[in-house]
Structures are given as C-alpha cells and as structure tokens.
Image (cartoon, rainbow, N blue to C red; front, side, top):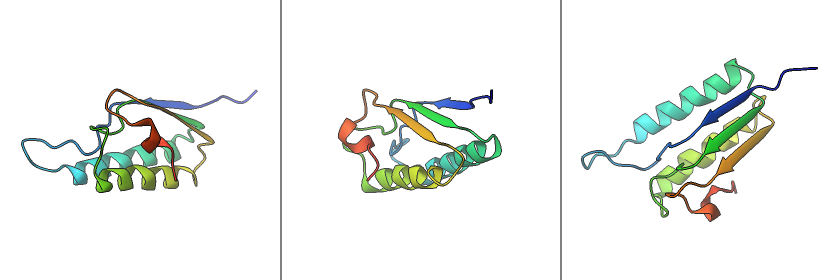
Length: 97
C-alpha cells in the first residue's frame, strides 16, 4: 500500500497590508515556496484550512495570485486540493474558475 502525502496549511491572508504597504512580493514568494514543497515532496493532497484572503472582498491581485497558484498545483503530483473557508473568506471566491 502506497503512502498518502498530505500538506496542511492555513492563514495565508493574501492581500493583507502591513503598515499601509502591500506585500504581494512576499505572498508570491510564499506561494512559490509552497509550490516547490508540493513538487519536491510529491504531495498528493493539499489542505488549506481557511483565511486564504484577508478580506471577504480581496483585491484582484490577491485573487490572481491564488488562482495562478491553484493552476500550477493542478499540473503537479497533487491530486486533490481541499479548501476550507475561514472567517475572512468569501466561499464564492474560493472555487477556482
């Protein structure tokens, strides 16, 4: 029987500003790092447990980062992505287009 490799993460808060400054470079670097972990560790299932965004009305840029990341993951070894909405998330924005 093969092992199932899970990666659990949460609280990304994409779009959050820090002292009035945007942090999109940091968010992008984090998502690149996470994608590399998925590839290097041959992750089968990614679980994201809430607060993907920092607001129920995230910026277009924050949404683009999220959707681009999911697109990349769909071409990796990861067979399933489980997304759970957090208190900062709008469930309608969590489904990939």
